[in-house]
Length: 368
Ligand SMILES: *Cc1c(COP(=O)(O)O)cnc(C)c1O
Image (cartoon, rainbow, N blue to C red; front, side, top):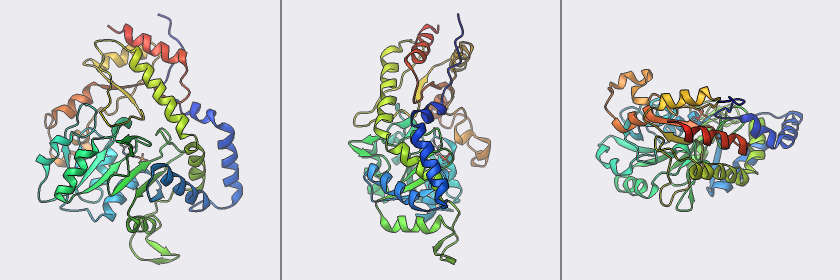
């Protein structure tokens, strides 16, 4: 077997090269402007991203984690309150809950790796205040059921859209169903900056105004501080670069979709379980996640042949050392834990060429 040049799990340089001149020009424009935090680029990005989603308000923040914890803070959810969330998420989703002193209550995922909405109701108690929906890997969750349950029990709904920019459920963008949608623009996300960034989106203008004040030390007017807030501002450089990427979102989405369509068509190995798509949902393919019983052997096999892969995520939050105080033992969430032991994200990035993908596909199909 000839080992080819290494094919990495992700290649951010290719995404930069695609619009290099536009990115470079925008960066110089911002540097030359003499204004670097909370200015016209941030306002422009907030307006354009809100329009893209079909939502009233967008407030730029410093990260996706900030969007999450600030969302719960503004909704008044904290100590003594419970928030329902799926077990198999990135730990930041859970930190968004616990930073405020609230308690995460985990629900098992469905076959699409999102919350199994049929298992939410049995976890609701008198302390439950909200459901945090994570549209994991880029696929929209079952929002019909989530919103129906939330409505019936009077629960808030927060959406973690860090992986789902542009994903829809029944024609409507993720992030616009609940009270608040939280986005991350970390460089590897589908809408990625060149550093950290995040945003809260909401149709509730009062919430948007609270977030706007909160992100800037709780200051409504310069040096007049109404609440104890945070410093969580999207900067001008990131906002400007995000506007460039957002203007190409349609073609970027198409490219990922085409790559994954090819994976779905060409991968056929009974040892490897492929992802599938829920009725009514769209998938924007933040990751192409397969499952295999002998996942670690598969990852080692690929590595030997020059192919990178990543596990999203090897340790579920409830078993993480950071959450040992929750006292949850191995076996508490069998489906979540099985996913943690079997999932593998294979190479997928903007600019992945036919030769690279063909090599990954052939190598995966030859795995025995
Ligand atoms: C990336 C991510 C976050 C955190 O976003 P940051 O911008 O890195 O803070 C939260 N939730 C999910 C599901 C993510 O993938």
